[in-house]
Every structure is written in structure tokens, then in C-alpha cells.
Amino acid sequence: MARLDHDALVAALAASVGATPDASGVADVVFERGYIVIAAEVSELKGAFKRAKKIDGYRWVAINREDLFGANPLSLGSKVGILDADGRVLKNADSPRRKV
Image: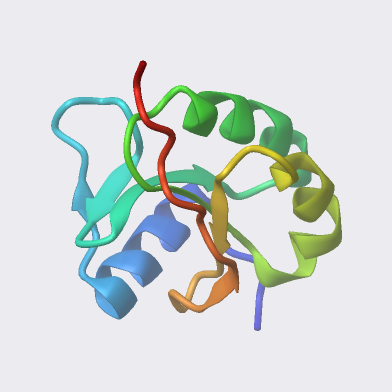
């Protein structure tokens, strides 16, 4: 599969999981299982995980599948899941933290 840019990842997620643009601006897109932040390039991974950690509820980072080895270490301890362009779960999102 060819490497997808930001807009192509958004379109692919819209087709595969029914994601729609996030009107609140907290994430790039939302779907029935939470919020998705897009990281189309390896250079965007760190910022995407940092942004996703601030979101309440289930949160995901969508990546190009070949970026998994760069994304996985950033996801450790973050409760952020990882999706590919086809909506496949590469790492499951953990239950959201309870606000104290």
C-alpha cells in the first residue's frame, strides 16, 4: 500500500470506520469508539501522541502501517490506541482514566 498523506488518511478512515471531522477541534476526526489524531509522517508521531494524551475518553492515533515501530514506543503508558488507514487496531486503546 502506498504511503498516505494527512488528507488521504482522513478519507480512508471515513470509508473504513465512518469517521467524521471533529467539530470541537480536539482531534482530527471522531468515530463511534472515540477520537482520532492523524500522524501521516514519522515526524508527526510525537506531537500526535502528546495531543491525544490530553483528550478525555477513548483516543487513537492513526498512522501509516509502516510507521508502527516508531509509534509503538510513544504509545506505552499513554492509554492511546493505534489504528492504520483501514481502521485495523494495531494497538488497543486502554480504558480512559477516571477524573478525580
